[in-house]
Length: 392
Image 1 (cartoon, rainbow, N blue to C red):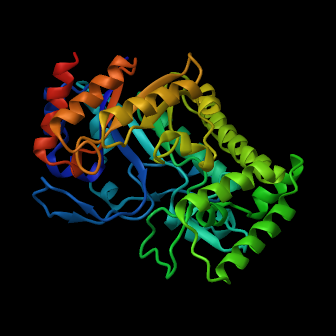
Image 2 (image 1 turned 120 degrees about the horizontal axis):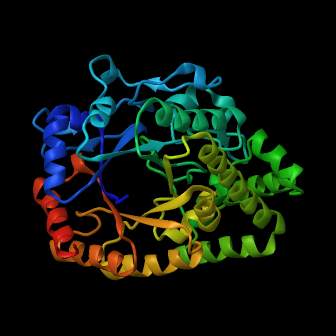
């Protein structure tokens, strides 16, 4: 089955009409619609919308009709659009294009606020409500339930899992603010989860997580109490040295990889056998940085079967370089998909975008997806058709 997909949202399809959108997507040479089944909040500029140009999605909601019995304590929040129409049902009712569902799994502020015992917490115990922790049993049950629910309730071809792990400290939260210059060492220490679920599970694996938690809190407290402002190169060197010198930190990072891999493994076992499961390991640039979020590319590829990587780069040569590295990190049997953004801030010219599509195909990546229908100008959408025709 081919995968030339357009990422999209239910609200855009509802506005423009499912049938008209499907016809337009086919005209561009696409064969799959990858629609958000669960999504976080945002503030989006919609260049070709006729209903309004700036849109605020409802935070942390599901865009399909869920079955509460498939969940534990944490249940999805239904998006209000479902009271009027079920866009996913309309999509699956047509037979012109394959339907894939994109699930933003654990990045969910609304559910985090409602279930603070299941969120990521830093070394000081501060909750990060935007990230349900993959070590928390109820958060895991929610993620597994969501994947199982949509694949059993709708005749979709598969799912793409985004945010199955630990979201970095800096992620663009509403009014994220600090009156000091940040750096990678500080952000990575603040981003480590030391919730009770993580600490207990890590100690069961032989990691002295309580000592590490205390050390991280001390280091951050000492830095924040100083007048230091770390240059970027020094901060990166300090972080690398911490990983190399502190065995517990290295083992704790490995433990996080195991937690995320086991969650994806359980999801793969829970969904319909004939439904594909792809993992979007990270939006970190380059993709090799995904390990910090608990994304072991080789292990996730083995668990799910498909890695769907975000090649969010401004130059075709950088796309090609990222592909080179990803190939090194996954097994030969893992299917690789590539997601591209045909616009600023990535591939801002038609020629560079076409070169990036060609580079992926020349590197053996035939499964391509493009982000995102509602965010792109009409002219940029046309680039997709031109590029696909040029590499057919």
